[in-house]
Length: 314
Image (tube, rainbow, N blue to C red; front, side):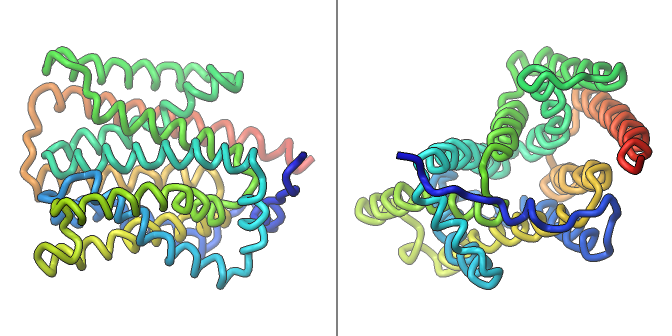
């Protein structure tokens, strides 16, 4: 028996190939909030990453639900919850985003914020590679060189430490496959996010209940500031995602491609100048390689979009 048909309301929204002030304001706000997120997560560094992720899930639900009710788009979520195929796809994206959150929270708490910045810098380059390998998308010469530089940067870091920079690669892989799987969800980004946290809600609540019953939890049992910080995890998780989802619809893809570097750049500066993480010789080589790769990637993307505009208008 087939589940109910689901339409993506966001796909019905009128989209132009122009940037809007509202879209720019939304997107920049979201990226700046993500850029400051390490400061918030650092304040929770004494709490295990799994507990922080569980609270990110639990307290994101009421915020995401409220937004969906205000937007009057609950019908699409109801249809998704009755569709086995959509639920399965949602379970995949929910798993990937929870892994990404877990690695990120642990990285900030453990003094690996620079590795987190590196991971998010590599993200767009990995997305290009995924598109070529899995979707048959053609890569330009500049994009090939960009991916090569990124691989070279990872190799430099691996040689220096004697091990693979798994934090950066873990964030890149989990987010890259999350973004790929997210494209297959037949619902809008706001509905998709709520579906994901709803699917994660039961295991998150079960884990928090276990921690509380065994005296290991920090919510309501530790310092009052810890309780408030864990409560705030919902806002710092859901608000930037929801702001971004609504801003992205009002911007050109090329603009989003440039703005996405705001967050990892802010994380980079916070890691070096606030957290005092060491920026050694290997990173002095690897990061400029990544920045050069991103310049090549961005210039190639902009050129491709300029070429495609006349064809669309003809």
